[in-house]
Image (tube, rainbow, N blue to C red; front, side, top):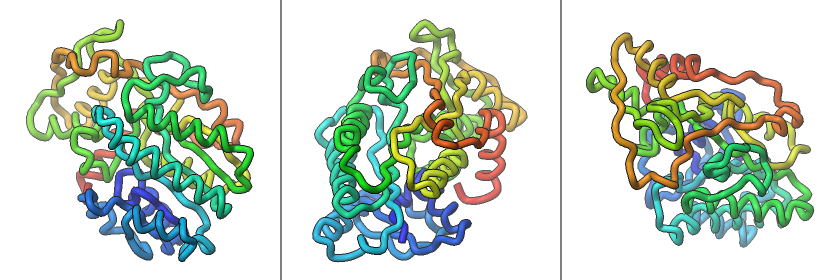
Amino acid sequence: MIVVTGGAGFVGSNLVFKLNAMGFTDILIVEKLSKSSHQDNLLDCQFRDIIDIDVFLSTMQKRRGYSDGIQTIFHQGANTDTTDLDKKAMFQDNYDASITIMNICLEQNIPLIYASSASVYGDGSTFVENPDNEVALNPYAESKIRVDNYFRSHRNKFKSQVVSLRYFNVYGPREKHKGSMASIVYQLHCQLKQGNTIKLFEGSGGYESGEQRRDFIYIDDVIKTNIFFMQNPQISGIFNIGTGRSQTFNEVATAIIKWHGHGEIEYIPFPPGLKDRYQSYTQSDLSLLRQAGYVENFFSIEEGVNAYLDKIETKIE
């Protein structure tokens, strides 16, 4: 059996769909059912059951079920709202649950692949998996750093695989439920469906209007890296998951305008509330990922936008 926490979410549901395509259907989906409102993502997926995170953790800690037959735990569940400043709630969702799962895997020798984030690099310019490069600009990033540091401090105790995947800016199908936290690609696409104007931030952080840069990675590439590590359980560590190439928000907007066949860009004032909490530039260093043996190429933003919009305009988002 494979366990996917956050399995009804953006990355999780795409992972379940891919596992189904590979022939895996004995999948246990773990969700925070009291808050889960996006189970439409699972309409075309096959799985054994879906249970609440608290029930799953309690069952696993008491060794009352599941653990003997678990092949891998993909821990994708998290509060991903980078604007949420409630540190206590953020840590309950992201840190406490992650550490409990990690300890279960440590005690029961279960391979673990979990989602981290490029947010751990803050406003730095060096995106290498090293504590010297990590600074939290918000509670979300701090929770991710703390989980990775816990893994680092306990790494020598693990007999089974543990992999932390630091996702950069992910976009793709099944993200609609994320609302304001959905990718810029989805948000700009929705703007053009409703009118003829795409709105981007004016210049900030030394960048001209729309020239802030991010490493945008298409969801299919994220799923491929998860599967790679599942198929290579001898590999453990912390790895960046990006394309290795930063592209501007203007490039994103241009690709979306080209797909729609119409549209123009309007620059709006940079929100004061995001000052000192905004990453104006990210670009993943893929050295460790390549050293681990991952050789696949990645979608460019132009390729990814076309693949994404072609897909969601012909089937359920």
